[in-house]
Image (cartoon, rainbow, N blue to C red; front, side):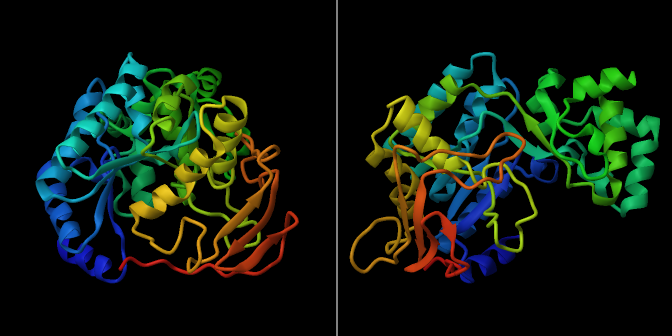
Length: 365
């Protein structure tokens, strides 16, 4: 793993990330993560983590990330830090404590930073409820396991991100659009389970059987965040803001895919916290979105407007800049965006796409 990481960093990677709440990485020990952090450090990279997130342990969640980075002396990026709010019955306290832990680490000389997405819900693959061993040996073997009652009982005991998100409130777990079972789209697990007269876990395994030919495509939305908890992080001067998603250009090869956070995140952040709540100035909001993350990645010629920088420019009307995307129709371009230049090339003019594509792969060092 260290050799693979070193190779990737030598090819231009900025660092490496973990998803310690997911089945494939849950077994990775703190010692293993630390060794990989040392490899990242030696290559000048940084460590980003979707933390382990054990229920009832919000402080330990952040403490492990800080300990790991501290041992390796590697810069730390805690991804969507307010995830700690769903690990306890004291969500606001958990977020406040997480921010205190980061500030304490920085005072101790650890280069610790964090970011947050702009949704009031989490999203992931429904298949994340399955342990890694269930996903081995191909489609037929997976289907056979999901059909076997004794194996279903065993799977149901497996700690996973889906049950952690649900916290036994299955009406908060909503299926996004399903091509294989469109009748289930946009409905919550509790409702489907009640209609079918089946146990929650049997309902989920039956749903996954219906998706067996494209098992990882079905996404869920977990409505378990409150804005009063999230705003604490957004108000922090070191909070970077992101979509927690990949870019899906409406005229690109991924245009038919749908993913929350690809379109709405920046416009929601500016509209809500600048125009409505007046929690941030426009200049502060722009800094959270541009120069702050650019400096974290050591992109010295991007993220600010000055002579000699690459001309990545977004020209918008701050009074009308707002998201058009909705929970179930997220792929909508923002309102109020006038012109966009990518590397100096006009990509959007007067709100219309030009067809020009001037993006380039960014590599570290």
